[in-house]
Structures are given as structure tokens and as C-alpha cells.
Length: 183
Image (tube, rainbow, N blue to C red; front, side, top):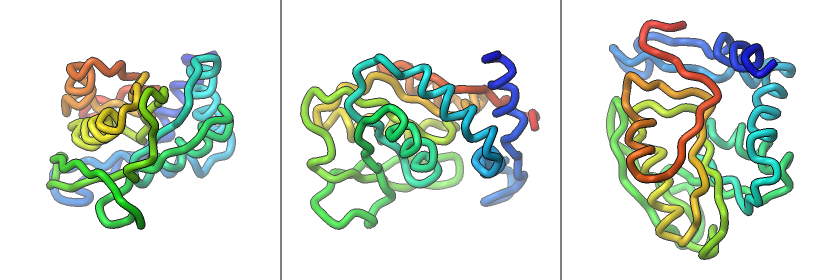
């Protein structure tokens, strides 16, 4: 059953070559969330993984991570913490810069988003070079969070991000893996 569910998710992720720039293959999760059955299967996979784990918060990275994370937080009956791109939050924030496969950026979170010791799971849509997820882990830890796990719909292991996350000591989980050349 779980293998079938993972395959359903993997097959729904669309590859878009040369976007947002030449040489980059964008992995589009839109088809996963557009189809009601596939979206439910995805959220259920995460729910079954985390129920009973004494999680306080689900933290998610702007913007596709919000889609998964908010549904998961609701299903687990826990709070939701948005980690946004710079300049999108209205109160005092802490921020972290990072590089990604096609540039640099910065993410931030409200300075009071997490209390010391809160147990947090970090969710994003995928892990490529790991820059966004590493920056989010640093932000959460700076606020005193206990980051139980960083998770994504898909890991792109050829870009090395999941390995970089593992080096931080934060456990990493992905529903599926997409290697270069796989559609």
C-alpha cells in the first residue's frame, strides 16, 4: 500500500525543463495538490508518519511548503509557523541568507514564532541543494526549537541537499526521490 502511494506521488510530480532559467529542471508539485486523491494520499502519508510523535508545531517554507504544512498541521491538531521570503512578515523577524541552484535568497520568521524547547517538524515541497531547508533549520534552532525532522515531498539527491541536511544532525525524510533524468 505505501509503495503504491509513494509511486502515485512520484508520478504526479511534473518536470519542467529550463525553468526558471536554462539548465534548471523545475519539479512542479501542482499536479499533486490539484488531484484530490493524490493530495489526500500525500497528507495521509505525512500524518501517519508524525501522529503520536508529540509535535508542537509544523514549520513550513514559503510558498509551496505552506500548502502541505498547513494541511498537515490541521490534521495533527498542532500550530503552523510560516517561514517566509524576506520582507513578507510584518513584525520583528530573524533572517538567514542562503544559496540555491540558480541564485541567492533570504528567509525569515517572526522572532516569537517558536518558544524554546518546542518540538517542530519542518516541511518543504522538495530538497534540491538544501539551501532553503538549511536556512530554515538554522532559524528554528536560533529561536530554541527542537527540530525533530526536516521533511519534503521529494528529495533530489543528485543536488546534494538531503546530505547537507543530514550533516546538521537533523533527521531528513522525503516521501519520494527524484534523480536527474527521471520524469
